[in-house]
Length: 149
Image (cartoon, rainbow, N blue to C red; front, side, top):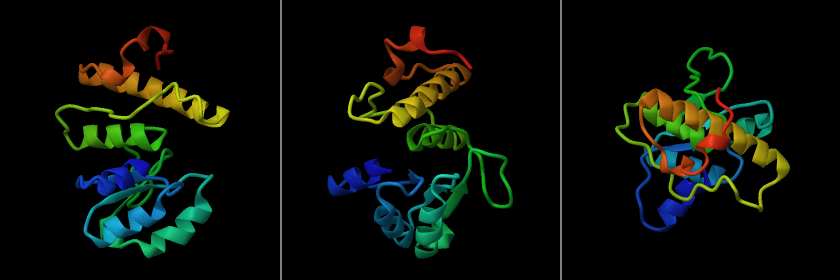
């Protein structure tokens, strides 16, 4: 989700934001009011953020997502973090190739909990690249150490 803010600050257009509203909810709000779709992911840890921010978004441009069984308009595209969820959503939308600029699975500044989440994201992306028959550069040099799904 922070990537959308960074891209906008650099003058790069954002076609879609994927977020669980943990870092830049203001960017999500602004984008929806500009007509840009925002995939908002709800999970057990972010209910207060969803309750606070979703009413401030333009509902016509919100794509509600979950990692559980989908209900009503809520969709489960796959993925565990904002980034790998974006990859699964792009795959579902028919993206020809997937790229992951700025990804760092070895960021020493993240918490232990975030490291565990990134390990799951890595496993999911390895599964997705096998299913797509594509090699994701972000996994180069890592595949041998990834537990397969």
